Length: 186
View 1 (cartoon, rainbow, N blue to C red):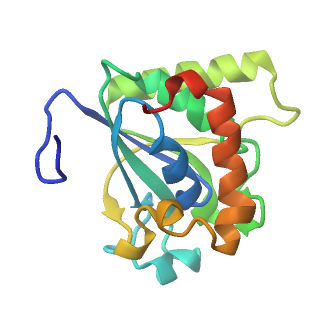
View 2: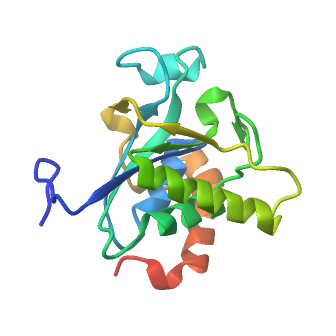
């Protein structure tokens, strides 16, 4: 069994932001092939930002998740497909009541292949006209990822009855489970 200190060289990492990282983490944690999900911050200019600093919108960071996955079980394209179904990629700097650049829709690619796949998926979604408004998802290279404070990790799993979890996260998880039932961990 993998621990946080052991790394399988065949695993890959995706870094995605689509609003509150608690929502993304709760969904990706249940997807078969995902080994680990870490909530954190990326895309800003302040070193080692705190949650309080990121919440001001002044650090330039987005709330993101880093998803370590086994590409033999779930592809990067599959992760992007899930990503685009669990948040609104047409809302600039906003997801529901969460407003600010820290809640932007963003894909931080790790290499040229991830960039190409993200561009292809975004082009396909744009051509399919699934939304009335255009995609505003940012595509940028990952420079630095900062893990969020410990109390943010596995937040939904540890706090399922907390108000935000019940009202915002639980419906997203429920929608995901219905839509991707065959892709859930056993």
